[in-house]
Length: 229
Ligand code: UYC
Image 1 (cartoon, helix red, strand yellow):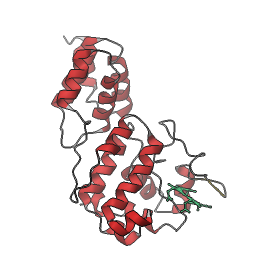
Image 2 (image 1 turned 90 degrees about the vertical axis):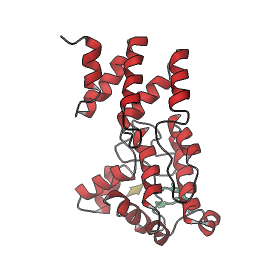
Image 3 (image 1 turned 120 degrees about the vertical axis):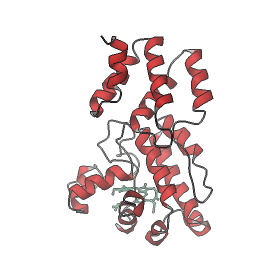
């Protein structure tokens, strides 16, 4: 016969995301025994490929007042749960820190700056991207940026989420914009005040790609081999 805690531990690996989210919620109301289940879950997980479930468990533990939990986190995950791989020596730790704090507006701005850094000096000065630079991005770096967004947003944000929605709409940009609330009717959503900078946003709302210069940059991002190879 399974104890309640064992059942909750098993439910963390349910194929149903809503069940997983509720289970983390429940465990976080059970004090140290619930926290222990969440810590075991993080230790057992695949650290090279963290999912948003691990990210959500990490964020819950981060809020704990227990010294044992905080020691565990600073020993096992001092910077967070996402490995910050880069083929061009870009440091994504400030981005990870902002997303852990759920500072999505600042994280969005830094995402653009980090992609400019990835593209090189001229993009860093320009502060915006050419689609041809995005095409040359290493898969490793785009995956790192995407995983950071995904893992600290309960799976809601990230280029791969936008890509899935875009594909489901037959790659029709005019259908994508209202779906992710970048446009309402004929009106573009105004940057930054009208965008939603928390998890109440619709799926795929963040990160933003400015459409002032057309769709080529977001097309390169969502068509990148990072998502298929
Ligand atoms: N902005 O409207 N956007 C900016 C978006 C458009 C404009 C930044 C997204 C439409 C100007 C980000 C949408 C438009 C600037 C975004 C959006 C427009 C600016 C900061 C919905 C007018 C000042 C980063 C599609 C009708 C900067 C950056 C400039 C900035 C994002 C205007 C992240 C998703 C077509 C004037 N907008 N942007 O790129 O470049 O500067 O002059 O998309």
